[in-house]
Length: 340
Image 1 (cartoon, rainbow, N blue to C red):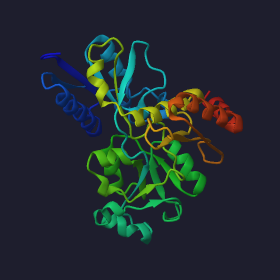
Image 2: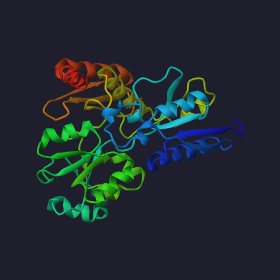
Image 3: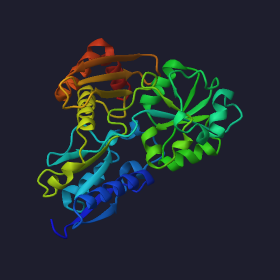
């Protein structure tokens, strides 16, 4: 491995570059003799910003070009937000490591419009003052009636509308900086983003409140970063120490659930697994919640399953079947027929 040059393929957004730079630094710590560089690659999802993800084909829009670079040798590894990665990978590629998960929750970011309710207005005016005391809300009563909420996620909009059908959900695309700028320009009362990205970029002070998983169940693998490379790559052993066993098992279960449900961005689907105690503990238990909903929030099927974490894929499979048997299949079939 002496003087080996490793090329990391990454998207060019500030968050994607932060993630790739973090992996670069960790690899250089593991093996000081290697040289690591970043190769910026623009994906289909980055190029087309004027259409909802569901209309563009959903999953894979932010990873295909990165995988093409791996397959043709232009990059040695690709760093992904795991929630963007399709359940099924090209045969010669695999996820070699999943880093320790950041906060998986969704976050509410309020703007400074005059119709913001007083309860959260004080927080949005001086969010840094509350620091580690940021609240986690389990209802949306703090948001004014008929407020305009920006989100590019059907999963988020479905769960918000289930509780507050009066809200006006407005599609919101673009990188994190673009979304925050649109909020600051007064286009929305609030927007909903993944807390993980805000924290990684040092923007936690923009968060007004975290949405509890009971209110907004996270997307499968939300908050997790994955490293993809060729199965036969000589650097698989170098990557291995970056894997976090607990995150790996939880993400494995969530992605299996998503795969069985046939999920992408065309339907509101959520899956979130947590471990009680460390994976190698004899009393470790995985608790996993899953959800399938109608885009307008009228119907939501939600279930939970528990089991031994080393049966992660089995648990994800069983939760998906449980959801399908309790009405999710009807919802998914209706969405499929609607989309032609």
